[in-house]
Amino acid sequence: MKITNLGTAARASFYVACELYKEMLVQPSAKLGLATGGTMEQVYSELVNLLVKNDLDVSNVKTFNLDEYIGLSAEHKESYHYYMQHHLFSQYPHFDQSKLHIPDGKATDLDQEVIDYEQRIQQQGPIDIQLLGIGENGHIGFNEPGTDMHSQTHVVDLTESTIKANSYYFDNESEVPRQAISMGISTILKAKRIILLAFGERKREAITQLLDGKVDTAVPATILNAHPNVEIYVDDDAAPQ
Image 1 (cartoon, one colour):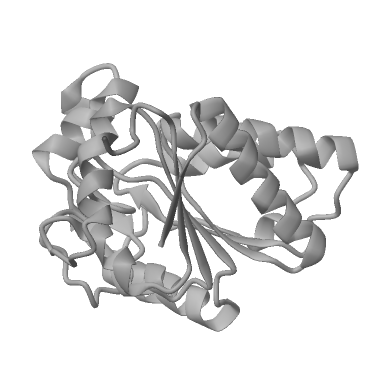
Image 2: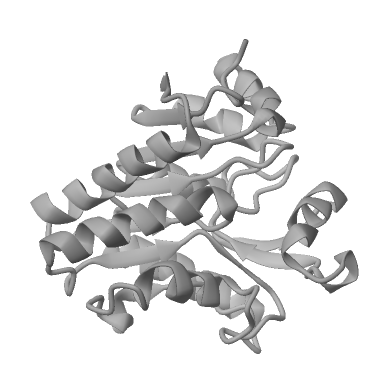
């Protein structure tokens, strides 16, 4: 596991965008695991700029998103379907929509949806680069503290701390969904390469715990210590002191 402090969120975002771009350049049929949230917005903005300037053919790229809220339609402005369209796919409309995979939070049969999503990842994978953020409580995807380290794609009950953190994006906390579909921890670990981004002082403690080297179910991100190819990029505020 390697951690690099790139000083600012802008610099780290550009660097990671370059890594994603290079993967698609070298491997036109790249399989990317994508994340959402405020941490990723500038990454996708920089990536779009690179794609546009170089007119890269992405028609064979496959993407698999980490998670989606349960109960939100793809058109809902706080759904991760909408997020990905708004920040990446509609900004560079040369992706093949049939190759862009996001869990269906409005599926009538959620048990079957998580099975189907896991099967799509395993059949079309392995994921070449998995992009991750990290929650203040150490969650990755929506795998909250206490999640089984062997979990596959599953339905998650969000903790109050995650609901509170995500309420920033909603008009009020009561509108934040209480459940989500998330790639499981074992699913994430099957990726060939993992890149984790963390910005801001509020993420420092989670990064510090991750770098302690001990796997602890109370801090789900610590399972990344069991993966052979993890890179962490932080700004000054998130860097351990």
